[in-house]
Structure formats: structure tokens, C-alpha cells
Length: 306
Image (cartoon, rainbow, N blue to C red):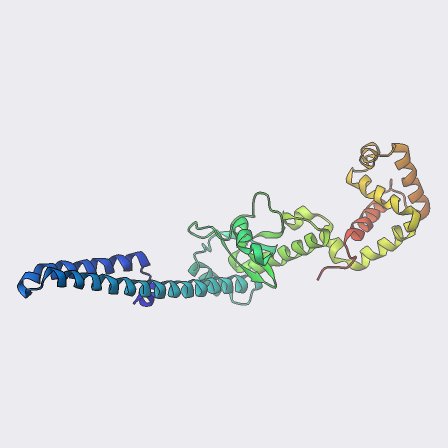
């Protein structure tokens, strides 16, 4: 009975309450007819005790069956929603079916959603789903999540907010039937963040040129050979100084302060770099190429992430 009631959507507390009411009805009726049947008080007591004991055993069995059915139904529903997420983000079903499946899962297809692709950690999956907003109980649902290729993926009405200590790629807003476009860009954002060791929720606009650096291995490696490989050995501190200089928007005094050196020392290192490589950091083209080389070299190992 417990399993059947669970599949009917009847809560266990309601099942047990109905059972207890039934037992009480039996006891009340037995008490009412006891004098007519000439049943002694002692026999009546034994009857009630036996009835309660049998009822307790039956209710325990019913509750266990109900819980088992609930878990099975929850697992099926979770897998159904995960299938909808995968089908929606990967574009494996028609747009009409996408909208129907999304609405069946409590998603309002009238809104646009952003695709999400995040680093997954099996030990923290529920916590990360909660941080991203996939476990929101608001109706209609704010979004859905699932695992895709060992990453936590899904779509949400709004990008994740607040402090997020892991990498999350975010795509642009799209209707549910066009979410594969958003997911492709979210995936690229996550690939870039992994390459550069970044955390938080970021889209391609936020990442700037870094996605191109992560993706175009040939250009980046050519620039590394052109500008950084000549600095091997005793000149390695020059590259480190250049990184800080670029981070300080080419402001020599501020960069020198961060490096704990005199500004003239930093100027000397820059001059030495230009002498060795033939670069001119006052030229925007050369400065861009050197910055690109430094960013490419920061990917460790210097390989394009798959």
C-alpha cells in the first residue's frame, strides 16, 4: 500500500494519519460492542494491545515501501530533467520538443536563459548546484542543471551572482530553443578560464582576448618563440618584470613599486628586452604581440586545453 500511495502522490504523513484513524475506529467500535459480546475487560485489553502492535508493524512496512517508491520516483524525475538539459544544450531534439519538455519540467519557455558550464567536483556537486541557482524551489523554475562530459551544465534565467570560488563559463541570453548557441560560448569561456586558472562566473565579453589566446595555439607559440625564448637563462627576470608592467597599464613607477625595484632598474630591464628582441613597447602592435606572448606563456603547460 505504501508504494501505491507514493506513486499516487499521497504524502506518507497522510497515509499514516489515515491508518491511525482506521485503527482508532476499530478500537472505538470494539469498545462499543464489547458488552453485547460478553468480552471481558482483560480480553479487550489484550485485543487492543495486539491490534496496536500489528498496526505499528504494518505502518513501518508501509512507510518503508513509501520511502522506497519516493526515492525511485525522485531519481526518475532527476534523470528526466537531466535528459532535458542535455537535449536542450546539445541541440539533439527539435525546437518544438525542447519547449514542450522544458515546460513539462516547470520552465517558462517565454523567457530567455543563459547557458552555464562549470567545473564539477563530485564531493561538492549539491553545494555548487545551490550556488549556481539550479536547486531553487521558485515556481516557475529558475533553471535546470545536469552533468555533461564531467562538467556541471545547465541554463538559468540570470547569470550566477555572488562570490563563486570555482570556474563558471556563462553564455549570452537565448530562448530555450536556441540555447545550444549560448552553451557553445559558455563552454569556450570555461575552457579559457581553466587555461588561465580563473575563477568566478565569466562570459566571453569579460574575458576579452583571452579566449583567442587559449584557442589559437599556433599564433601564441610563435609569439612566445619571438619574444620570450630569447630571454632564457639570466634574462628570465625581464619577462617577470614585463608581466607586472602590463598589469600596471605600462605605468613604470607603479610596476617598480610592486616589483620592489627602483623605476630606473625597471626601465633598464625594458630597454634590455627591446635590445634583445628588437621589440618597441611604445609601438602598439609590438606591445600587443608581447602581451599576447606573455599571456600564452602563462598557460601551464603551454598547450591549448581540449
